[in-house]
Length: 352
Image 1 (cartoon, rainbow, N blue to C red):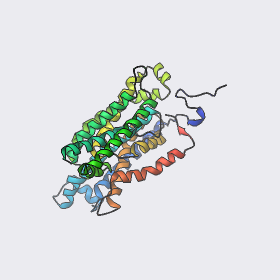
Image 2: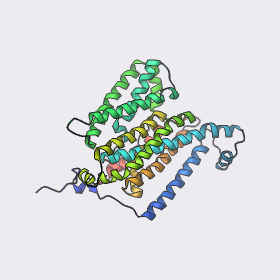
Image 3: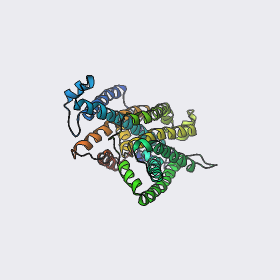
Image 4: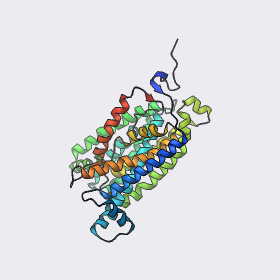
C-alpha cells in the first residue's frame, strides 16, 4: 500500500499545514511593521559618515536651511533612502512570488537567471563600449535580466509539456550557470569591464540619485500591481495544480504572469543597485511567520519588511568601517546567512 502524497508529490509528514492568522493579529502586525519601517527610514536619513541627530534630521526635512547637513540630507540621503525602500520592496515581493511559484521556501528570485542576465549585460556593454557608470548601463542590465527570464521560460517549456515549477527552476539553474561562465570570460579578458563589474556586483545604494529611482520606479510599480492581482490565483495553486484548475485558475497564464512580475521587480532592482542576496529569500519567510500563508498578506508584508531589511543593511554598511563604506550586498548577505541556516535546519518546511 503506497503512502499518501500531496498534489505536488510531497509526503504529508514532510510539510506543515498551511497557516492562517486571525485578522486582529495581522492588523497589529501591520501597524508594528510600518512603525519599524518608519524607524529604519529615520536611521537611514540620520546615520552615515557624519551622523545627524534625529531631531535635527526631522527639522531639516521639514525646513531645509542651506547648511552642509541640509545639502547632504536632501541631495544624497533622501534619494538613497527612497531607492532603498523601493528596491527592498521589489526584492521582498519578488522573493514571495518566486517561492510561491516553485512551492519552495528556499527559492530566491535569482533562480530565474535575473541576476546572471543583468551581470552579463553589464560586463558586455562595458567591454564593447568602454563606457562605465550606472546611468549608462542601467537599461542594458534590465534588458539582460528580462532576456534571461525569457530564456528560462522557453527552456522550461516544450511543445508537449507546459512549464512547471520544477522545470522552471532547473532551467533557471542551467541558464544562470551558462551566463555566469560567460561573465567570467568577459571580465578576465577586459580590465575595464572587470573594474566596473567588481563595483556593481557587490551591490550598493551609494550614488544612486533621483534619475535612477525615476527609471526603475515604473517597472517596480507595475510588477507590484501584477503581484497583487496574481495573489488569489497563487493561493489556489498552492493547494495543487488540479485543485487550482477546479477553482477556475488558468494555471499557465498565472505562471507566465508571475514570471513577468518577478522579472519586472527583480530585474529593475538588480539593474539599479546590483545583485542583493538573501532579501528575496528571508523576507517572505519572515512574512509567513507573521501573517501565515495567504499570498495576499505575504505580498503586503514582504513589501514592508524588504525595505526594513535593506535599509538596516545599508545603515550598517555606512557605519561598520567609517569613514569608508562597505557594500550593502555584503552586509545583507551576512545578515541573511544565519536566517538561511535557520530555515534549512527546521525539521519541517511549511507547505507553499
